[in-house]
Length: 213
Ligand SMILES: [Ca+2]
Ligand SMILES: [Ca+2]
Image (cartoon, rainbow, N blue to C red):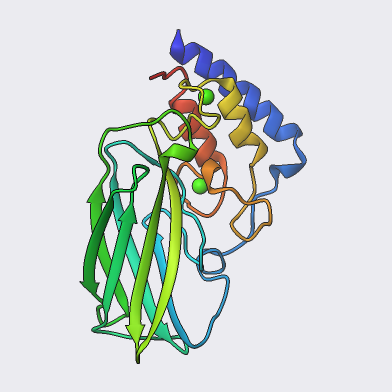
């Protein structure tokens, strides 16, 4: 029954997509999506395996129990700086802080990992996690921040504890947006290719159709 409902929803969405003005695929390259800005001077940029590249850019959402991979790239005048200690401070919705210190490799990238626990609060704002990454470069500290939601199911876009057609329509409405767009919202970016809402994201939403907590 669930599969039939999903198939019907999916067919409807395909029709919507065909009728939509947004049907043209985004033409941005991966490089453009992930490295949209060039900065100079001391810089640190923290991001996850799903995205968040760019200063203060948020990451797409995670689910309870999922693994987080954190990366920070440290540069000076765009050149990567190896052998620098980066401090990652991961702050959960209860304001518990987890601190990791990791050294940058030869390409200026420091990495660390974390597994999300299985605790969920009542609404999206109380499920916001924040990462602060900092590094001392020549006596001056460079910092970057990153935010993301950790939710019971990434496809429950409207936070009502179930994945239904409303959620799929929300993802569909964001179809074709990229992180270069002013109206970009990583909440709709459920699947690779990250940085772009496309058919893969709608498929993930549809695969979760009928799920409820
Ligand atoms: Ca929902
Ligand atoms: Ca995507």
